[in-house]
Picture (cartoon, helix red, strand yellow):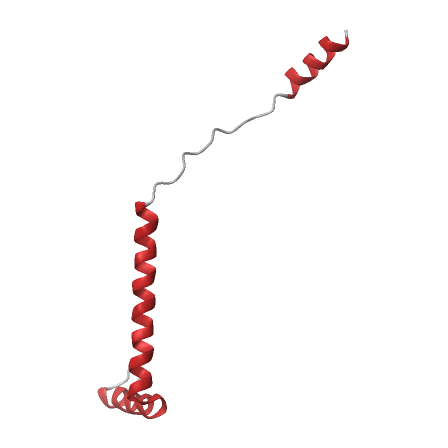
Length: 74
């Protein structure tokens, strides 16, 4: 009793068609297909474009900076 039979799905389909109409439903599916195609194209474009090489991480050495300051003062 928990599963839906084929008759339930047919009734749901008829109600959806009555609410939205055939033209509106096909237009909605067409827009969804265009969105999926645009998404796939965007993902393919990202894979094709080479990214910039990462810059090396620069670290600050505070000890050397303090020692250099002291040697200038002395």
